[in-house]
Image (tube, rainbow, N blue to C red):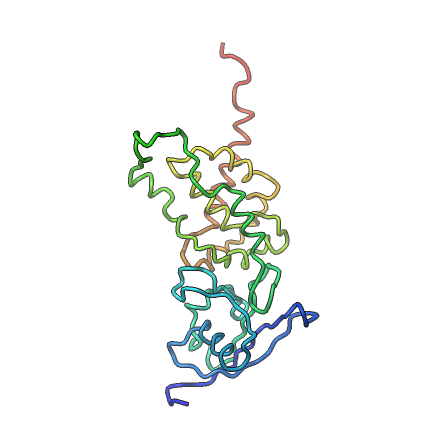
Length: 251
């Protein structure tokens, strides 16, 4: 082993539904250098100790969002988290909290995908335009209204951090609400009223207990907690405006 390498113990949550009654932890001693990520540590275990270790990853550049894990109990992207920051202590990596485990570090995201689909994450035009009329335009100022909420990479770290989602899996959750807000704020979109029905529903924003941990763990600073709070306000306004609107003709 190179003198530039040290040994760190990595405790890994293992679970094979075909052979295990419940998840358990196994410890591996992994040589590492200072530029080695937690994801690379998991890859070393897979390549050198147990080829059956299962986890998701793709880009290794904090763009795809697929390598999220619980690292010492905190939801993080493993590709941008480094082993050197935990040495000489043992580090524990586990599947994302609040999701059913499929195998080892891989969780079932089908419920999350359904939530994303439910908010209609695409522009529903206010007014149809023909090809001859050209594209839908907006000003830089209009774009800046929602640009922050376009950066979500669907890593689901915010769901692993959300205590309310842990208690109530039907809660639409922070990332879906942030994406909903992105389209509702888009000047080209005309489906805000439809989406607000979901916002104000039993699965919507009023489930949120305003902990704010979702924004703390977001690797792209989307601030989903802010999107939730804005939509709480918007939903409350919609509710009260129904009673303030005149029900008859003006005198």
